[in-house]
Amino acid sequence: MTRELERKTWDVLQGTGPWLRLREGFDTASEAPAALGVSRYVTRAELLRRKHTGVAEDHSQATLAKFRHGHEAEALARPLAEPIAGGDLYPTTMSVEVAGLRLLASLDGQTLDGTIIWETKLWNEELAAHVRAGTLPEHYTVQMDQELFVSGAERCLFTCTDGTPERFVSCWYEASQDRFDALLDGWMQFRRDLAAYVLPEPAPEPARAEAMESLPAVSVRLDGALSVVGNLPSFAEALKAFVARIPKRPATDADFATTEAACKSLKRAEEALDAAEAGALASITDVEAMRRAVADCRKLARDTRLAAEKMVDRRKLEINEQAVMAARRALDDHVATLNAELAPMRLLPVAADFAGAIKGLRSIASKQDALDTTLAGAKIAVDNQARGIRANWATFKAQAARLEFLFADLGSVVHKAPDDFAALLSSRIATHRAAEAERERKRAAAEQERIAAEAKRMADEAIRQAEAQRLEAERLAAQQAEDARVAALAEQRRQDAAAESARIAAAAAPAAPLVATPEGDRGPNRFYREKPPEPAASRADEPATLKLGDICARLLFIVRGDFLADTLHVKPARTERGIGYYTESQYALICRQLISHVGAMAELYAPEAVS
Image 1 (cartoon, rainbow, N blue to C red):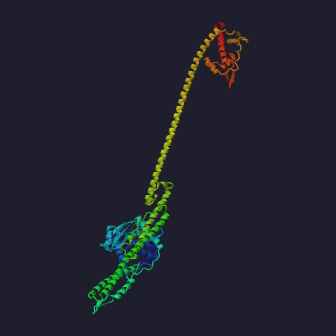
Image 2 (image 1 turned 45 degrees about the vertical axis):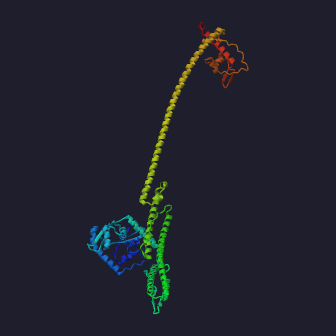
Image 3 (image 1 turned 60 degrees about the vertical axis):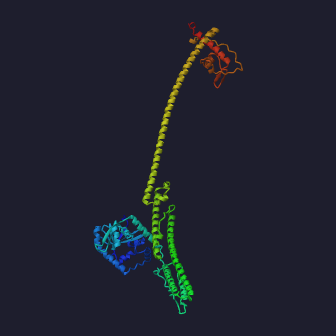
């Protein structure tokens, strides 16, 4: 799990001077519980002071004797532990440097392959019960976390024994990356606090009440003349002086002890005054004055005591509140600094029960140490959270560029564990890209369908146009055939009408005489009619509106312009844009000339003429 770290094994004998000097340059496994605020023996504040000053703790003879007893029990327990570990266990001192930390671990034992280490503690019933249940206190697990991390072992055999088989219990403790991370975070926070550490004022003496002059004993008696004899006036003066010396705003453990002791003295004074008054009531002379004096002293003592008791309770509450608020402000400032660095991301609130941390503690020093330890733990949690956000933010920027719209809830999901965040990131991006690919596939398919539909439409249009052209060609052919048929029929009708007209004309007027062509024999056309006399000219105001087509329409047969001009000797009255226009008079002449021409042709080709 941590095999890639560069570890060093030191050739020193544990417990010797070189070993002690080596420890001074490292953060050791035995110090780890105190650094993380879970030690049963050393507070975090004490370890900070010790690391700052470099002055090692002086151990009492009893503590040194306990250490010797522990080493002896360790030597006796080794043969009992080795069969469980599966091999010989060799004492080893190792170190590793990581993230600016120099960590050291003095192992009670380690197997040759380095996969198993051994940690043993001196027998006590409470710890033995935890070992049997497999629920070791954090005071021990933090030490083993550092030993496992520094050694690179996979698990630790933990034993509790006095060196005898009868008092020997064991359990296994496995390496955990999460625990390693917590260990490193704790040490890094400790080092930051150590860098900012300022040696406090010398620790005060253990809190005890200030030596105050005791109140005089109350003396009230009656003399033979029934007069009151006693020290009430001097007692009252002493009481007032006593009250004046009581601290008005206790701020230290000593102040509180002095005030509480004064309250007890005042309570005793009240009781003494009651007793003195009761003993003097048998007389009536001067009793009233005595009672007033006693009442005044009693009231002063009682009022002062009650006020002092309330003031003690109030000041304790004020000091607790101020200390808790100071710790909370320190945490808030730390969070604000990180939030400014992480913007636009923000840290989630970190629960830090400062009030609960000092509950049940009496001295100001113990409360401050508890608050400092809780604050350090909260800062570690905040730093871990910030580190996770930084890692997730870096992953986000690397993988989700231009895909920010997929993570509208980034401010929430960025707090996930890095692996979970990376999985979520990959999942959303993959889902988005799959959806994009599906949309692109559908778009491409739709485009293909559109292209295919357009191609089909064009093909259908080509077929339709071809069919339309075919139908149009057939229609034109049919129209031409019909036109030809109609023209032929019209021609036939015209011919019939012409024949009929010729017949009628022949009967009505004699045809021009046939003459031989001047040039001689012309074959079948060797005879022709002489040019008829020129018809009377058209009136000057007679419009020429008849085109050749109009004349053909009237005649019901087709004649050509050259036929009219050359054969019938009728030329257009006017020509416009190549089109000849005839008058009504010319139309009448054309009809007469046609009749004459047709008659002449009939005569020309009559059998008797030919013969």
